[in-house]
Image (tube, rainbow, N blue to C red; front, side, top):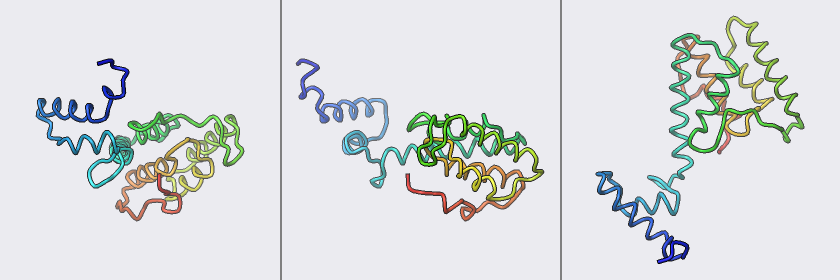
Length: 179
């Protein structure tokens, strides 16, 4: 059979082949599970694969934030980019300031200058007040995706640094929007 024909590349062939391969490796996925993941791009409970990856990416970012707070490492522009990169690791490239900001008409240079001013202001504070970072960061929204999640991770970092009790109510609700 010619590999370019539709029949050869039919979803059913993929499902059967992958199911058999996984079974030989002792990985417990039924053919229906594989079909759901590959064809419908759905995971357990009908959640999208993207949502599944974002969940794990968010956990990675939380692990990173927790480690930064444990060691007392300061938040730097590079670390902020790393937080955003981790939040998008399995979905799209992250951790890069957008080259344009059409929502606000901001140029690339203006965006960098605004982020520099944000970090300069933070450097003058002994303690960054709760919500301050999110309010100021979200007016800039320097990344293409997951700015609100990045802000939430930074707020978590400051809660940990201050020794605050952590509660899901601490999320910056007005900025969290469905992905």
